Length: 99
Length: 138
Image (cartoon, rainbow over all chains, first blue to last red; front, top):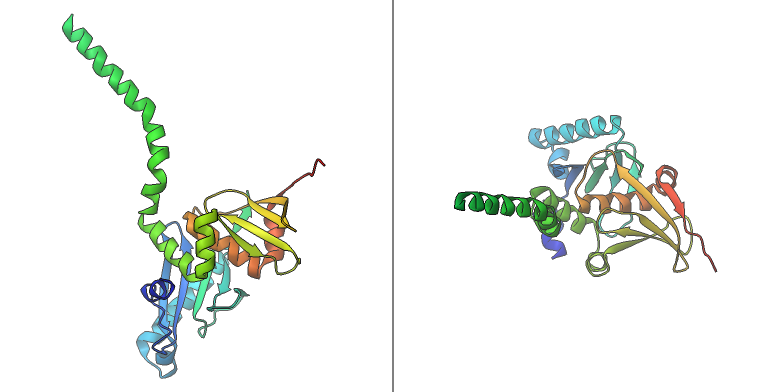
């Protein structure tokens, strides 16, 4: 069930392809941008455009006060300040306040 | 005469329907929410972030335990639905925390938010949260 849900969300570990994903939490659930790291390295224009778009969204949300976390399977989450295209998954959470 | 009785009966039923509709909404709201697109997407994210064991804990116990990265023997109990996060030390509740996103999020996303912040940004998390200390009367 765990692996299936990862596949549904676009991450592919078994095939060996490194697909990165940016997930932005919102009232709609989460908005996602994916990119293929391998294709970025060989200069695929579509993959590069996806990374640029992810970078733009990252910067935009950070400027609104969102916090970014790098999440890798089997490891504790890590807070990041800069966009990292080598990350498997980056999650942006909106600004929080005391309730 | 009979039409007056009929009108009053209809009016009575309308009043009854209005009176019970909030209760019906409260009963069915969780089921409706679970099927909304936003909740489904948030549940996908939750499953991606949690281990199968943590998923089971959330389902069966209604909370997720996130160990503190800075204080030994401290565990944060994050509820499945909106509510206070309990801070447990040596198995006893010492504090309740209230922290919420500025944007309205599905319940599953809020669990992920707490988990990520506790694991990777605990200091800021504690700084921002409103704290309610539990007083031991014994």
